[in-house]
Image (cartoon, rainbow, N blue to C red; front, side, top):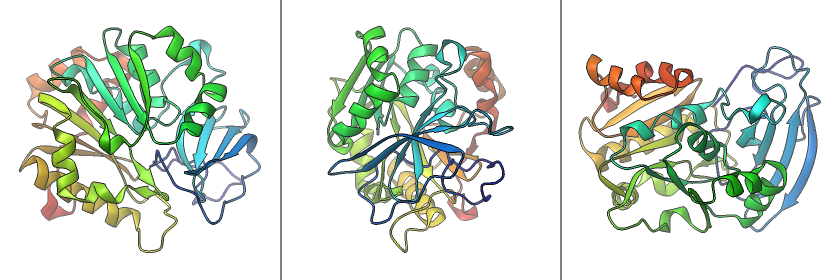
Length: 306
């Protein structure tokens, strides 16, 4: 997701983009941090160049002022963020992670897979708002999880929700679902600064769809113009469009909806929630802070380029 960046950072700086990302690979060139970011930790693993950085709380007017960021890949796309200085460690981020937290009321059972766990930004919000929900997360890089435990409070989150949060190290595309499937899934998978190439393939979505229960749903970070990929030719808009087309072919006509948050696109599978009574019922089951997301979804229309 691209958000406005405070001066003196240039408006097109990829740093401070609540990412269009969650599992990037080793980068050939790592962008220096701007002055507003203080490096907290830096780790190299077989999968990632991992940096943890704090945004100055004096970055006045910027929604990420005071945030802690997980940066992966050369361009510095943001893969997780939290606001540790906020009272009670508020889980909301003013990014698409908040939209992810609206999915549970639409699910047939209170269980959710998070494919691309990162440092746990989505899981934190889900566990905060839904006390009956169980969350299973998959993250390819064990070093990312180690950083999450050391710098993003994942250890405490796992301790506080030991019966509801289960974090797995491994390939999310090979994740195993329980009998009958999860109630739903969040898909947030990137590599080399771009949406995972497998997500532009219909077969991948057909396979992933078998992870969720009948009438279950998925929400997907499809990236968009805010993504800065490492590979030439991986244009964020083109990759987003290819991902949405593959999803539409896999799930069927009228079974994909989209929302655009500052050039970061999120898709949702299942029948569109457009009838006033359906939207009202969804809002009634959401905390007040999240109800505004219900009204911004629209049916995906490949003919119009959405």
